[in-house]
Image (tube, rainbow, N blue to C red):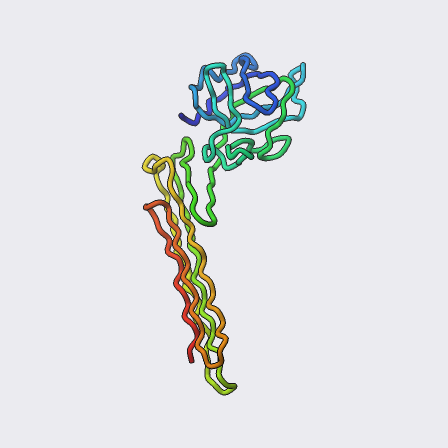
Length: 242
């Protein structure tokens, strides 16, 4: 499976609706067919636009990443989740980057369609904000940048005075979370990596009894990118004493 972007690859298709596009031959003299430049399971970025009987655009269009199949010469308009640009459809796959119906919405083509490969390097951005997730290596990736920022620890609460003249102090602030920013060669990475996002620290509870010291906060959890990198969570702040 490879990402391809050969120049002047354009074909016509007929009424694919919102489904798979069946290609029907080169659009104009000098254009290349998909079958002459692509192998089964090759990925490309293409524009599909509706045309009238005179070959003029009608206003319906779609910028999409898709999967080519030589048998039947078809283009599947959605890729498996995590492959391609970061635009997800309801089924979890990657579909429309933009179009006359807006990003993420498949256009319903009911007439003739012109399909053209374009050279568009769309970044793949996978964001994880909580819990455990799975990073999926994009098709055709050369380099992968991993950025992590762990949360800070919770602050401690202050001492509760026993009298108006008692010396007291506030709780200590929690420590800041660690960070990681690494540029990696994609071929050295596995196809998937488990990502863990640690929970932020929580503040210490306020004491309820006069003359009591404050309560410590809790430390934040660490963030990990498999076993390759770790960004440690911030430490807990201590409670106020005197």
